Image (cartoon, rainbow, N blue to C red):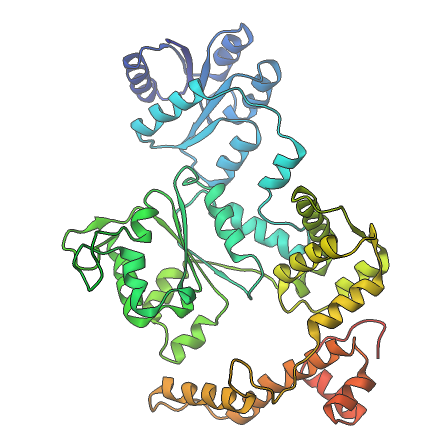
Length: 477
């Protein structure tokens, strides 16, 4: 069905291009070079769709959007701008634009957006649940505000992003936010964890393989790069990627194309790369385990996620969020009293946000009381931190054997190029600090009991706490 489309742009050439394209689609088009005429048409009830530039001689097109939405909330608005910054895109979305297109635009993409705008069902006001579901990250602490500002600058770009942070800090959530609120949100989001794929299969998983490429390859298989075409490829735990696969990935980033294993025809890689790791990639480079040139290709826009212990002010909001999620899953609603919440703020959270989420679900599932007190939290955290015997085998390997294997691998990685002096003190510090932290956690911060368990004088323990910069749980000595 023919629709009337109102076009406002002070560039006559663009108006003519849009006019021809939209008329070919069977629509009626009205064109103007200023905002005043567009506003008069809209106020008179004309038009089924608006396409407007941002910078016009008499008014900013973004400022016009709220006025249009106030009198005709159902009218869809497509915004175009040569000022194609993220701030422009965010403002357009916030003020109610249906879609934002940077100039120069692809005419086919614009036609596709017009079709969607004219055929999409009417917008319904979002429910509270819908709004909650759309929030990819929770928290208003200064650390999280800085993350939000960084993500806002990156969402409208195709820059390669590397997300750094400890396990459980929400690296995949950030990657999904970059995709879901970015220019590739209509494409697929494909994730692959390098640590979970056997080393010999990583290249096939990433780039796919042709039939007969290797034993067992009975059919052609698409890799993750091909699956993610037009969208985002999330490479989790990139630090665990084998050197051979790193070389192939570097070639893709440099040349923008790849070939399947056993294939000869190059395939264009139309994907945005978001990588993540909990490792120190610079340290892996020094150990010869990660390519320096790949590091600089991936580290175009680094984003560091703070551990939960650095943003404890966000814990109440996170607890409420996870409690609401549990209710949606059929579990009863729980809330924590002030003493219980304060205890959560004092905890070190080695498992970060993931550990807090698991605790919130456990509280909802296992406890009958509606209000959770500090005694329940104390018991839960004590169980979480109950230390195993240090000499007890873990995965069939004792502590001494595990440390020995780690140091042997460390020297092997240097391949004869010995590290700088001070290794003895560095290794002792790496073992000593977590030992004291977890012992204090198991004793709920009681330094007298911790010193007794460690076999140390209390003054010696206090000295080590200061030297190793170990935070002390408030209210306990």
